[in-house]
Length: 113
Length: 114
Image 1 (cartoon, rainbow over the protein chains, first blue to last red):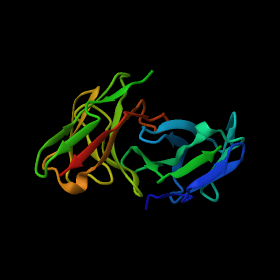
Image 2 (image 1 turned 180 degrees about the vertical axis):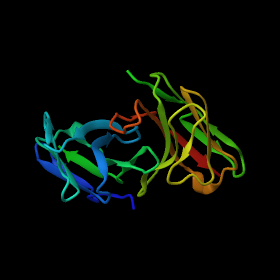
Image 3 (image 1 turned 180 degrees about the horizontal axis):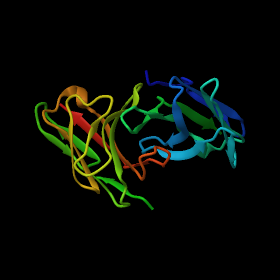
Image 4 (image 1 turned 90 degrees about the vertical axis):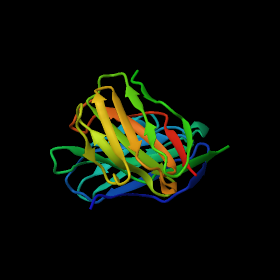
């Protein structure tokens, strides 16, 4: 069964705070992992890919634990502009010679002044 | 920059009407997708296409069909719209079949079926 589960949220944090989002996936054959960001009434956009060794992009750090089938996103020094919904996305081999992206339902973050 | 353009941002249709949602991408991407997004349910894949005239069902294809006559254009068709098809529809494209490539979305088409 394809499934990607995320923290239910919403997360309301003050500016400057550190916040972490978690995500678990059910299919151990999953190949690729991503975090997308979706602003209110806008389309999702790629925030960052997630690699096994962990990766960082400025204030954002993504981690992957294949053994536990767990992905995380850490945001340090939160800014008001970080307010958005964060989508965990997992790419799974569908068995029909193709891959299929499965989206989590998203976690809403509100950064408060 | 990759651009994915959806023809209508907002549509209001009546139950039973035939609805066409058009999507065009300008980056020669092989893969195109149609999703719907609903509160509490997230994004769900309706149909996708890896090549011209090729289509595959996603997770929720019932009540929908698609057409890909040209590489850059992927259309979603609601043969007889129903109120439970009121939703935000998002078209997306990506470069390769490996799934490791970024997915680019259009701005979405918000459909209301009365």
